[in-house]
Length: 85
Image (cartoon, rainbow, N blue to C red; front, side):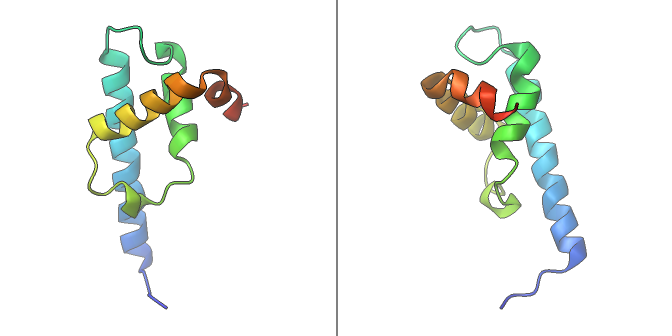
């Protein structure tokens, strides 16, 4: 069983939170109409990644994070919106 220090875990969670913040900023800066509504993107992105382990995002960029979310959002439409309710 691997031991992960509290400090390492907090740093990983902080890195994940920062990456999601960057993805939110990227989404809100977009001018296209293909993604979810800008006024909902923050809540939806946070909900989408809430159960993802920080190490699963460690080698991803904000564009990767938003792109995966936007593609899924486009395919599921209302399903993502109801996930946050």
